[in-house]
Image (tube, rainbow, N blue to C red; front, side):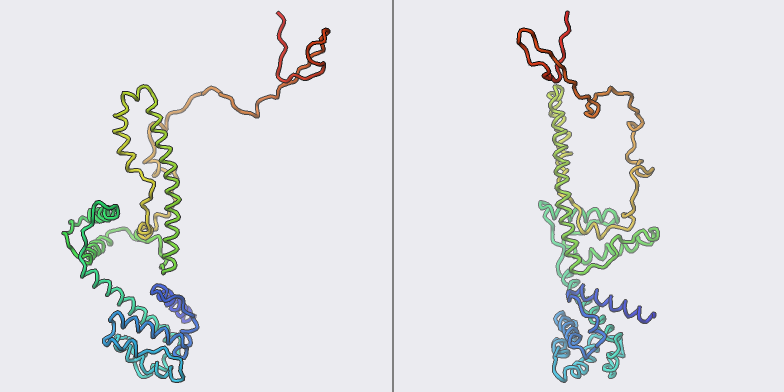
Length: 354
């Protein structure tokens, strides 16, 4: 039972690795068939070709020619003959796959899964090394403070350095060096934090389709919050403009504008929440704290909350308490004038005789 559960976990991890690499879904039955499955051989050949493109092999032509995704009668034997050489070039630690008994070993489903996971991990490492070499060769470009994106990046970087008590980096510092310093400082401070305080709120791994869905959801929420903030800011503008209608505001108009204008300019309808905030959110952010709790009221309580309102006059305005008017009747006059007898006059009352 434990072996079956371990095999299921390995297959699930393999599927996540392939999706993260952009290979798409892979049929689970292909791994159980091993080298006899054309899809299995094609996937191995594709992984080897990508490794050769990134320079992970000692010989550039080895990744393309060693594993060929052929479907001929001798394709399986050729694949099994070339596979040990590829694994030795990649310094595979699995001796069972690198040795002469590779054909017999790959008949086991667990060996096929181990082979694919090893190739996936090698490709992930090769991509990270290529990115690392690119970052090392390109220093941090000077950000233009006039652009909003550059100003936001500079502000985030300055706040991070201040929080970690690190000095401001010199102009032209490589990005990799700056990231290493940040990583070393954070690793130094993590043991001093309480246990389980840094558990991420988003603990599930994200592949390419989930990244796209998360980006689409983030953009939809941004548009919705922008619409709501526009409404609230319009109400704020109308409320503040009402204070300028009084007679006293004519003398204090300039002073009021000097106070309100700086505060209003920083209130923009666009939201600054991004996917980076979701990735940085901790698990304690999902705890719902009641608005009336003692911790929440410490920042919202004030002296005005203790003032009790007295009795206020009743202004009415309740339609269900109004009574319908009663009709009045008037008899025919002798001179023939007036209205006919029995005609109703709604809401009219007779004048009292003096």
